[in-house]
Length: 206
Image 1 (tube, rainbow, N blue to C red):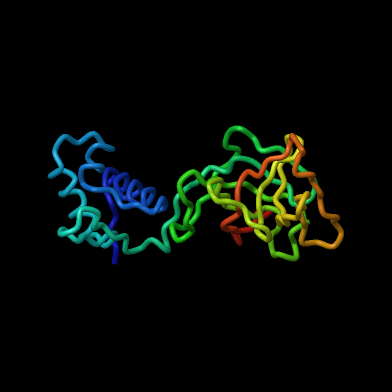
Image 2: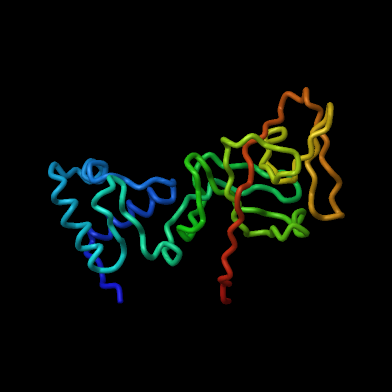
């Protein structure tokens, strides 16, 4: 059974989880620098305590040899940067409008961001209002992928179809016609590729 962590141990564990969500494990030196410790032995002591309590497993022969032993059941908050339309276009806000706690198994690469879906145009792809899409802005968008695009300063999430002179944004709902954009359109931008969808099953009561 896992024992309760002290506040500082919890802070260190949260940092490990945050770094793991970015596909990296910090070294002792990086942990010490992050928390302002001049002596890495202090970090060692905290890690030993966290390990004894069952949250991590360490391999002292490897510089980044810290393994989370519970990560599928651990949730960390991520900012939601706005709403994206599955239907008519909406605006992406410049600042966080909400936060959502995702399990660490939900990989969120560096520079990726979260948007909340609004509308029903992707219902046949099982993407619904209130779902959170994880968007990677560093991937090159391929035809057939779901993407977030900005058209005339408004954002949509659609399936991208590339044609010779036209880009089409398709819904997954027969009630919506494809959006067709000339490749020379000056106010169109592909923001990123949708790499994941997260849905909470919790319902509000009342």
